Length: 162
Image: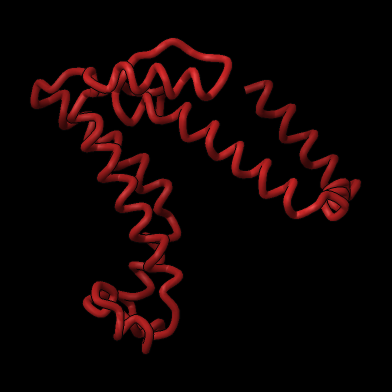
């Protein structure tokens, strides 16, 4: 928690000093490459948790990929099902939020079955759920893990306290 507070204080200080403007002097190509590399690193470091595989921590992302590929046969299916389902719900809510006008939603093969009138209560309720989708994902994962435990399904690792 001390590290989080320190990072927050530094971030606020850098924001007050307007240091973010330095990014304007970095080329788009460099920023895109950095973002892509960060995404690959984060993806490979999180896949082990989605697959329910225990692998050693690696210094390089390609070592992590190698360890994942060589231990794919040890995938914990209940953990994988839970992770992919929650990911699918998050992505669905994200794309629903950016679906556009009521006319575009009416023409979409899936969104046409969901509320389209932005002033309606069902639409606003679904938008609230979509806005709070990260919290929804954490709560769903915790309840799902609890249900697994109650049903005697072991192996779903709880990462930290909620």
